[in-house]
Length: 509
Ligand SMILES: [Zn+2]
Ligand SMILES: [Zn+2]
Image 1: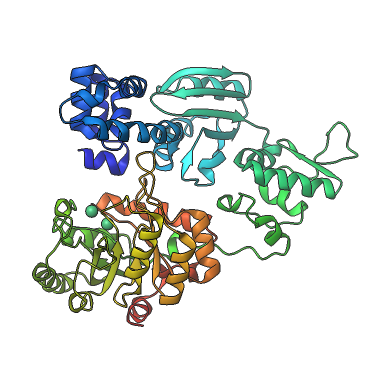
Image 2: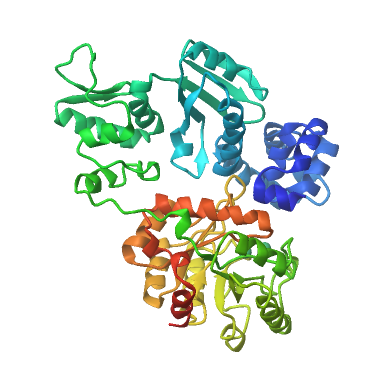
């Protein structure tokens, strides 16, 4: 179950357990080095059921005295507490999307609600989300607001007026709901989608043109009472009047989108329909939950053209990786399966551990026979930045390594990534033409957007991956896709858009 918790941030049994265990226990469990066993001991012996009590006990030295804990564990707790406290204030994108989905399903059928849209960081697909923002238009704003306030998962109403309301969702984030005039919807969407930095730039641009921009519209400065907006109804109208094309929300971060927009040189971002396959995933042969056949069937149902069916290499005992003999047996099995699947091409993939010295977990003679090799670090996270960078560079210098997996090993809200010199690794990737992965697991999501943008600038090939450990994880592709979009990637920057022939050519070159 905790495997599931790690991937989804939410499990079916979670709600049942919440009733039995204090909510704070789940936060305690997230502190790196604690886990379920130690959390249970702390709860039983020291009655620790919150981060606050954990901090107090660690500071007073009580934890070090417990059997099986000691000074080292206590020091570790103190070091990691700070990270967890800081990061637990924001929700992972996947969690916020799930809350927003519940709210949307509740609100959208209501007759008084039209044009319901999410705004804010959620619409921009940021990796973590503060509040959830909803906008709509309505013939009857008060009815719309009172319907929102009766949403069953409202924990507490924070504020409400005739056209807006803020609530706290049960065990979840704050959710703000606004009803705006149909004629001002576009201006409101621009304003509430943000980012703050993007909007500052838009207002500067407006001023230079003798205009002023707010949530109600774009007005001439001479229109003192702001009575008649020159643009407000749609986002396109507002951007066009400022001399810009419509800017995709993922780009609204003031990272050059205004300058490029003014020159009409914004990239045409990669889209979901461009994606033709996955290179990184796992089956029951290692630590996955579905068989190769089940995974391939699900991949075919997604209308993918090709699929590299992967598993772990053996160095890490807990992932039950495949020894070479098992790899060749799997290849034969995949060849058998191919006769059952007419619409998708199946290949042998593998996620191969990068050992602490930068060697790979398989001999070259083995690597050479695997159709696509993703190399990742799963051990010895505490090496220095210099050691880690050298370790990764050495691994990707191996000509049989096609892709570098999750570059920092971070698990958001749980553990920071190991330290690496991104620029050095990206340069090495460019030199060796190794692709860099955007891992779509909701708590990994790395490369992060700014590094994707740098990789695109350098011409480093990028691959999106699901790292699926079950068929339901194929949805991770969507998260990876939006990181790519936030990094300004077009279809040509991403290997998943290549046809079967093209991807094989790339892998062989
Ligand atoms: Zn795994
Ligand atoms: Zn993996």
